[in-house]
Length: 258
Image (cartoon, rainbow, N blue to C red; front, side):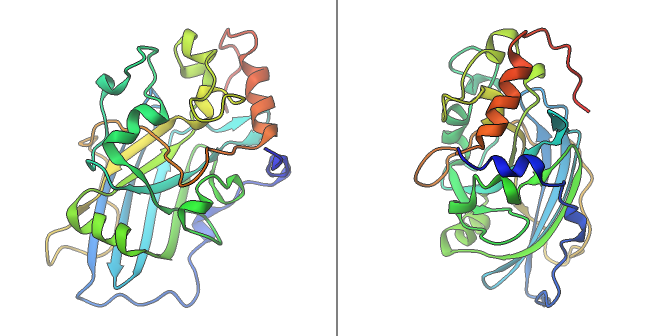
């Protein structure tokens, strides 16, 4: 709750993150793809491709239509490969509280906990799952990075139970009652701060299919939710909590997200 420093950091140009010295992937590598579909009324969309050889995974992702900013700063969207559950993006029936939002904990039984964090730099383990300084920033970004996979995440990809989830909603898009709710993980934050915005189940491409490019978004995967961070809750910055709560205080939805 003391990482308010991210509020003064510029948005990260994720498209410039292609690493030098990236391992070359041979013909025996396996490529997984997912269309990222909107959840919780985010109206966002995206695609992700992951090419795996050994314990190395080259991730290429494009997203658009996410919450753009808060208090004049780029909105941080943490994102992960989730594993260990059904490998599904839950639909509206997952909203057991009936508040109109699939919360992080309500969605967790469908896609599980964090297997890998899609961070822009540094740590990619579940421990980095809530680090806003290495989150995707703004409404649209391209993410390219080669990361190491642990055995559980690699196994989940092979079994078809790995799911990519991008988090962070514009609070003004939530139903009126949900705008006033605290996060189910960190009560000092609004529900929007930890709620999922995009989801897609990763599926292996057929043998011999092209190993590059991003599949077009068809919306074939249903919505998903949840952020189950390993050990501890979703520790967002105090500055974000303050900024979002100020936006919510009149609860009139009059502030436009850029």
